Amino acid sequence: METVLWIIGLLIAVGAGIGIGYWFASSRKGSVLRQAQEEAQRILEEAGSEAQRTVLAAQDQAMQIRSEAQAEIERWRNNLRREEERLQQRREKLDQRQEALDKREQMLNKRQSALDRQRNELERLQEERTKALEEVARMSQEEAREELLRIVAETTRQEMARVIREIEQEAREEGERRARKILTTVIQRMAGEQVAELTVSSVDLPSDEMKGRIIGRGGRNIRTFEQVAGVDVVVDDTPETITISCFDPVRREVARRAMERLITDGRIHPGRIEKVLADAQKEVDQQIREEGERAVYESGVASLHPELVKLLGKLRFRTSYGQNQHAHAIETAKLAAMLAAELGANVEVARLGGLLHDIGKAVDFEVEGTHALIGAEICRRYGVPEEVIHCIESHHHETDQQSLEAIIVEVADAISGARPGARRESLEQYIKRIRALEEMASSFPGVAETFAIQAGREIRIIVKPEEVDDLGAIQLSRDIARKIEESMEYPGQIKVTVIRETRAVDYAK
Figure 1 (cartoon, rainbow, N blue to C red):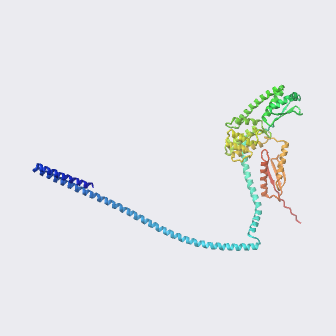
Figure 2 (spheres, one colour; figure 1 turned 180 degrees about the vertical axis):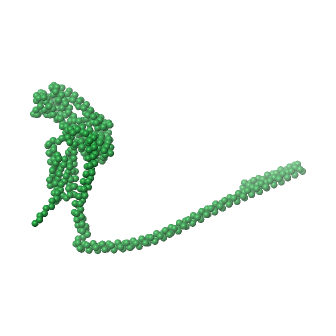
C-alpha cells in the first residue's frame, strides 16, 4: 500500500513537472521548453525504475512469508498426525485390556458360582453331622458347647493359677532386685539418724509446793496462764509434775517454755505471767523462722515463699507416731531427690514435693480436711508449681497419682516413716491395729484363720481349700490388701500372705 501511494506521489510530481515545463515553455519558449521536457522525461524514467524495484521487493517479501506460513502449516499437520496415531494406539491397548478384564470377570463369576455350590454342600453336610452328633450325644449344640467350656475351665484353672504365680513371682523377684539396688544406693547416701521424739506436755517441778504457787490465790495465776497462753494446765496428784495440754503444738511449746521460766524465776503472778508468755512467744516465733530456713537450706531448695518457710518451721513442734515432722520433711526431701536422680525423674519437683508433702500438718488442727489436701491448697495459694502440688495431694492417694515424681514422694515418705526407730506406737494402739487387721481379713468369705505377725507388718490368712481355689487365693490377697489401704492408717507397708493347703487322704483296706 505504501508503494502504491509512493508511485501515485511520483505521478503527481511528474504531472506537476509537466505543468511547470509547459509554463516555462510558454514563457521562455524555445530552449526552455526543451529543457523542461528533457527534465520531465528523466524524472519519469527514474520514477518508473524506482516503482519497478519497489514492486519486485514487495513480491519477494510476499513469497517469503507465504513459504514460511506453508512450512508452519505442514509442521502442525505432522504433529497432529503423530498425536492421532498415538491416541489410536492407546485406544487399541485400552480395548485389549477391557477384553482381558471381561474375560477375567467371567472366570471369577464361574469360580464364585462353584464356591457357592461347595459352601452350600458343606453347610448341608455340617448340619447333617451336627444332627447325627446331637442324636448320639443326646444334647443340643449349645449344651455341648457349655459342657466343653466347663470342662476346659476346670482343667485349665489350676494351670492358669500356676502360670500367674510364676509370672508374678518372676516380676516380684526382678522388681525387688532392682528396687533393692536403688533403695540401697539411696539409703547409703542418706545416713539419717534413727531418732523418734515424743510430744513434751509435762513440766517438772522442784517440789509439790510449787503447784500451789502456780495455782495462785483463788486460782488466779493458773486462770491467767490458761487464758493468755490458750492451753490447759493440769495439776493432779502426779508428784512434782504438771501437764500442759493443747491441740496447737506451737502454743503448747510457748506455754512450756514460759512455765519453766516462771518456775525457775519463782515470781508467779498475773502481770509476770503475761510478760513471760510474750517473751516466750517471741522466742518461739524466732525459732520457727530459723527452723524453716534451716529446712529449706538442708533440703537444697532454691527459694520458697516466706509463709511456707514459716509453716515448715512450725513442723518442728509437730510429731506423728513420735517422729518429728520437721526432720521427717527434710529427710523425705533428700530421699525423694536421690530416688528421682536414680530413676531419671525431675529431681527438683521430687525434692520440693518431699519437703512440702506434710506441710498441711502445721495447720490441720485448725482447718477441716486431710493434711494432704490442706497442704496442697496452701501451696497453690502461694504459687507452688502444679506438678509439686500433685505430689502433695496424692501422697496418701486422696487423688490418683499421675506422675513418677508423685510416686517417688510417696515412697520417700514411707521410707522415712517406716525405717527402724523413726516412729513409735503405744501398746494400746498397737494391739488395736493388730486386732483390726485380723478382723478385717476374717471378714472375707472362705477365710479359716488369720494371724498378724512381725509387729503387724505382715498378715497371714489360711483359707478353706474347698471354698477358695488357687486363682481365688491370688484374688483374695489383692482384695484384702486393697481394703487395708482404704480403711486403715499404718506406718510403712503390710504384707498380705494367703495360704491354701489341700490334703488328700485315703485308706487301704
